[in-house]
Image 1 (cartoon, rainbow, N blue to C red):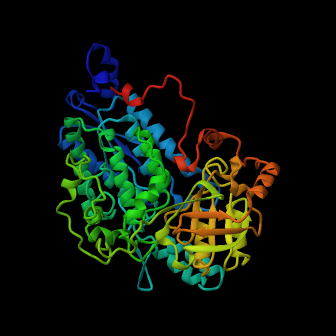
Image 2 (image 1 turned 45 degrees about the vertical axis):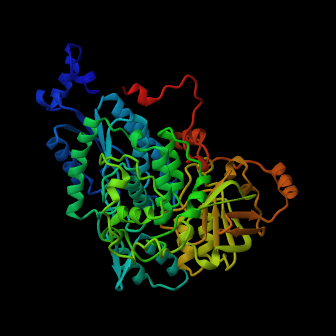
Image 3 (image 1 turned 90 degrees about the horizontal axis):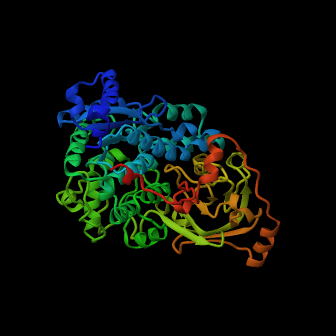
Length: 566
């Protein structure tokens, strides 16, 4: 066992003395040491229940013959950090989480890991760590929040942000906003729509790194506790069979994840996280294949913000396995991929049934014949941009309008709420990319303000930043190259005409090449807002959004961390 390095032999007597200091017995030291990575904290609603999940996992590990030992991982609440300086610290935590988990796993010679994430960057960060360390690992999340209820209708966090926009134009009173405020988030858990957290928890299940129900069983259900116990038991089975993350997260598994991303209508943030996770697993995932996969993958689900169903209803309809079963009817999944169940994808899903064709459309009757996400290109985004096609109003699939240009999110919000943005406009928010932010902020506030003010079917928003999974409308993000490195988005002037054609995957600035070249000569990089601390270090290492905003340093004589783990 890997843990022999800290528990066996006379040379390890000092190590054992420290285990004794922890209260461990000789018997416990003879068993495999299983690290339980707890993302519990009291600031993220999706994480406040993870102490219960941790205890259940520990029990499962112990029942199966292992010694569970808990250590922490951080997590940021994207909702609370939204719309202010705090959002610059959201995406950057993904890499902090991966790095700190790697450090803890390697330093203490764990034999296996159980990852307990839930919210936005915590899930991909721990998946990156799992791929990097490459010891037997199972994921079990904290589960989704139940939907809220206001005036007889189900609601979620996106409804809350849009209520603020409605209030700004007099469509809602302060008392009505207060009612939404009190009733929109009724339980612990990750926010109840197909936002980033739930997208990534669902895709963890698709990748094969989580057990059935990981993405959909509500946080407050006792079934979630049972799932956690089974995850603890299953990691011991994986250890026995030496099944590791890189055995599971193969090129084919990532293609499955992209396919299901399209079928489910996941958050655009998946286009950042899947390439980053794949990179750690030794798989290069080019965003170009997203359109290839989308072209042949029908969109079967319209969960909030795209529609009016929620994760709890997806769970009742049969969950992720039921959607996978529908998609498999078209031969779109690699069914021979191994998973943490010890079985293949095909074996896992073969008996699954779609229990509600209104929530999971049958393959013969999809919402659309193409997937929920599209990659756009053109002179405004020569390397790529991303849009959640399934959440765009039909009349905005093709749009042409004048640019309204802002160099930060705050200025854009002020203009939107001040009534300066009119039907037909294309709002451009730049210098919000991975380097330029730094940190690539989510633009839920401006998209929600546009929707709440009744402009969602007439105004587009384009940014080198990114969007919350809760954003809807013609919200085009991840524009590459970003403004901070001199991308074309830095050269857009007020009033320039921008042409959007989502069915044709095009994003075009209607300015001649000669004019753009002239503008580039006169362009000067904007002075960075933050030049010290972690964000400054992050900005110096981060790559572009189309590569997953991974961190990269010069590599000479590199040795893979998983090789050192042997």
